[in-house]
Length: 188
Ligand code: 5GP
Image (cartoon, protein in one colour):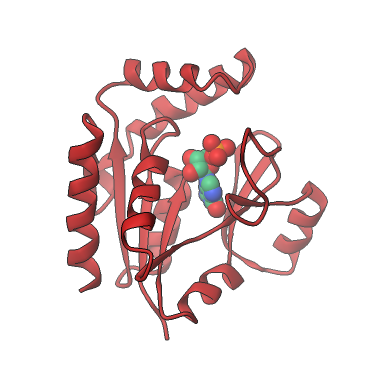
């Protein structure tokens, strides 16, 4: 069967990963996370095959050549991220819908490939300042990486109104409750 796609996009630091994790816990019988392939190094507790399929740049380029991706992007210079066709099929074959945590450009690209089957949601942080604080607070990136992330985040904030829905994340509990409703409405 072909299921649906629920796409969460936002600048990194807006809280989309937390909201997506909340949904995955609450609706584990209905949705499953699309594990992207990435060429970056695992951070902290991240696990290969759970958070990402961490692969080499060589392997990534090989998969591009073999047209194994639905979409892919060089999200940061030299670092690739992409959604594998096989990943979406794996989840649909279980009778579940697919949920994505993906950058803004990738999110819009997925939406345009599956216009009817997908719901695109933009998670909006309270402000750019708050976003910067959150990214800094992670303490996992060097200053160089941080300024690249800041620049990208600021640019991405301007894409909000191209999404089906803007989900404000000023307060996490409210945002999660709003996300519950959006999801249930869309898959019913
Ligand atoms: P991070 O390195 O913080 O895990 O992710 C960096 C950015 O890449 C985030 O905005 C994340 O959502 C995005 N991302 C993760 N997987 C994919 C993917 O498969 N395709 C695209 N286009 N972006 C992705």
